[in-house]
Image 1 (cartoon, helix red, strand yellow):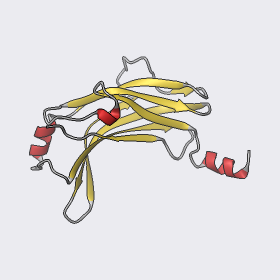
Image 2 (cartoon, rainbow, N blue to C red; image 1 turned 180 degrees about the vertical axis):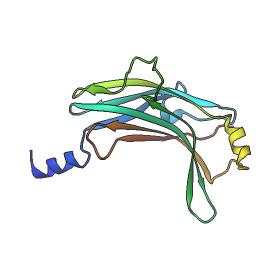
Image 3 (cartoon, rainbow, N blue to C red; image 1 turned 90 degrees about the horizontal axis):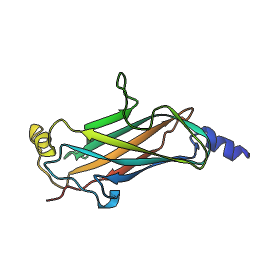
Image 4 (cartoon, rainbow, N blue to C red; image 1 turned 60 degrees about the horizontal axis):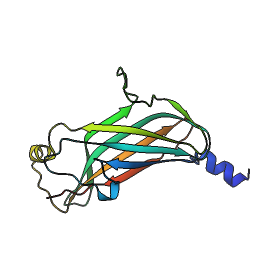
Length: 159
């Protein structure tokens, strides 16, 4: 292994990628949200180029505001982590788990919001516009890596 490969491996070159397979039963590029939605669910995949241990997974639905002064604000509408403290998971994937090189693990996520998107916007006195965007973000915690892989898929609001 060259010195560059060693540095890359140390700096997060764990070879792990994560991707959303489905969002509300459709592929991520075609997925969207409705104002009446109170949650989001789907499936994700974790793939590794080399053996590793996946410690946890964090998936969250985020509303991002662009304020008039230019600074963005991110508001988490709901999140699901695996494993969750003091909660026994019913899904087939138990965290932490070992992932062999070249293999893929598929997991489910189910995020419940604290009300509908419409109600959450009303509580903050916000209206849907070009300064608001929604996205689904999943981060996978890889043992021994200072940089963990994540995937972000933007979800437009449908009429």
